[in-house]
Length: 503
Image (cartoon, rainbow, N blue to C red; front, side, top):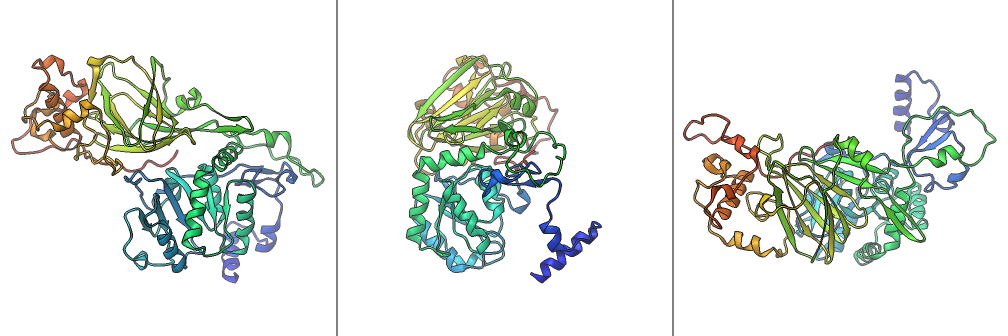
């Protein structure tokens, strides 16, 4: 502790502050920002207007390590004891025993506390990292197992993820109790619970719709103010939150750009009360600010799918092209976007987002990209707003299971449409197919190879070249100028692009 205070003294001195650390930490400033929802703070209503409860501030700390969503179709649980209380090899061995052969995908972070190799050979549904961006994992997680540190808890609240809190120190026990009091998760008193108790607690929380609703309601109560407030007049006699500080609401929707240029995921706030919930999955002001243009709706589509169904990859001839806005109305789906736009800076890249009917997150697909999804639960329902009406002759498709794409589908046997099944059963086509992109050997790999195989399969269904109108931008590959024999220009690499930091 002495070393910590010495470091704080040096930090304060470097900024011209001569106040002793203890006095500095105990002082009440004219304006204090609190990174918690007021409702989460004990006696939150007794804090006056000099305390601004801005709520959790979450960002993608990609510098801590990249992470890809799993392809096994299992719900994700993140387990972390933070950066201090991670020297507990017995605890992490318990975690491994708890989740072995369970229908969960466990992501464990151990920091520098132990060597991941100490945990031995791990089953396929468990992965261990020293460090990884928790905010990235939590965007796909159904649950967090945590020691109750303020950072972990606020991050989980900010992303709407229920918690199992296993406090490892005195200062995290009040946080753990508060999580349980507010119905945001469970508090386990044992510092090292057994595997049976741990997995039962995880399953109980996952099955409890009241906890999910409470987390969504808590998430909707906080927000940073849209503009810095004027410093209030100091008054030591005031008690209770002012109407102005209590009335601030969160921005109704948050947008984040995906690894495919021009594509976004958008997450709305959910408002719950004793009647149920209300949510607006599409909100034009946020969409317009993120994308830069309005979304004109020509048609609304709705699909319901059994678990294991894969639909797509579909895209529309450009022009006119088609933009999509997709959200999950029931169940859970893995939504995939692939950039098939030759000349795009992310051509050949893909990204995947898990959508569900708890968060009501949505994905926006710009013109020219391909869309597919896998239903992760029975009766999964997706709603699509599209910018153009359905015209069969304009619709194009790629085999979603083409191995060169390497898309992260669940490992269970997929259920495909008869059309997709016939295409997969067809032999590979001759090299020179009808699509302009496929006229050269340079287009036989990655996304271009997948397009080549699609066009060849379509050619077998009819001899006319004009029945196979690839998007005009696909022709750019043939207009790029002469190529020397034997050289293979690289048009794009399959696989997910680098993560894009949250704005």
